[in-house]
Figure (cartoon, rainbow, N blue to C red):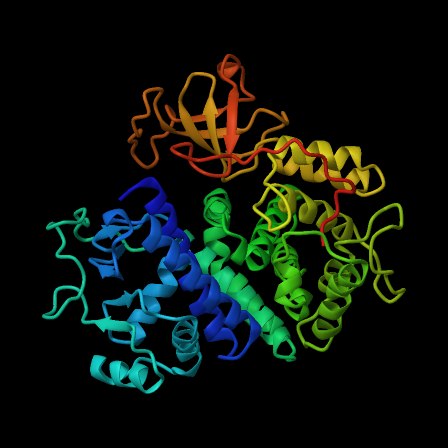
Length: 487
């Protein structure tokens, strides 16, 4: 498969999984479900135009073999959340994959996505699932038996496709942790979109459930929470803002209960955006004044709904209301006197802008952390200086979870900041020749580097990316953004 073909299938998988998510959360005629069905069809057509066989393929098989997501016999790498949702959906259908024909249309995708909303648990049999799809007019998407059973519709593994590893490892606890945070934010946003009060207590329970994994491996959680596609940026942004805020809370030595509260409030900071039309959220061009005012209502809308929840705290309401409040008074909205200001409102302003600038967004290219700090520092009326300083000390120039190329040519990932802003702690992953480094658990002295220590004074970070360097593009843009706030 060509590089263009791999990119096209990856885009299709993301759109397809996003459609299943939206269909589960909303309903068939919801604008977001309609939009995802159109985008999924467009991505499928791109795949057929640029994929295998010089564009002559008329079907695509997407399924699960030996625990791995595969497309036409080839294992798909990455897209953890997308893979999980597809695997879970297939399990509920008692199926091992979808054989999707080129004759499929957007209405059939929409009906399939909405089917996830209608399903309770698993269907009794695969034949039942097939019958239910046919009753809904889904005739160009055929369900396959599970891998290894008679009638498997996918490419025979090892006979035309890349071999899929036997006995794959179960997802790590940290992967599951990030997935649960993502799901918790999605559930809260879905409640707001449907006019219901978000279940703060439910999200707090998620936070308490994953707390242990975040304590032991927050850098890995930050790495896994990176999102590269626009369609997940609202929820993905909230998860990363929450994890960055938790990192700051830990650097301040907050007790566990307060740190949990900071994480939960930060995860909910953009919940009001669930009331914003998708046409505005995903707009790639500038907004009109009326559209911008409509977008800016999300802070008050979110706080209004959260205030009706028994789990709402003063910190939650402050974070939701004030994460767009600038120090020069040009932000929004005006805070009511009933919300006593703390440091967390100004801190969330910094975290929100920093994450937005360093991530893929519909309206701007991704910036490097260095460029994001420059923009924040130059916009003197935006950030409160003490809040920006606290964030910089906790995060450093190279945020945890990112990938670095060292001056030695070796590759690694950042596992934490140090007292020196530009000298992080790094765990090496590859030698200078690009070979993966193997090391025993508990014996990492040769691969863990504290670049602030005199021992490593001659080693520096030569490059930083949110993605692994093999084929990754950091997406740097030197175009200034003034002011630094984002909708």
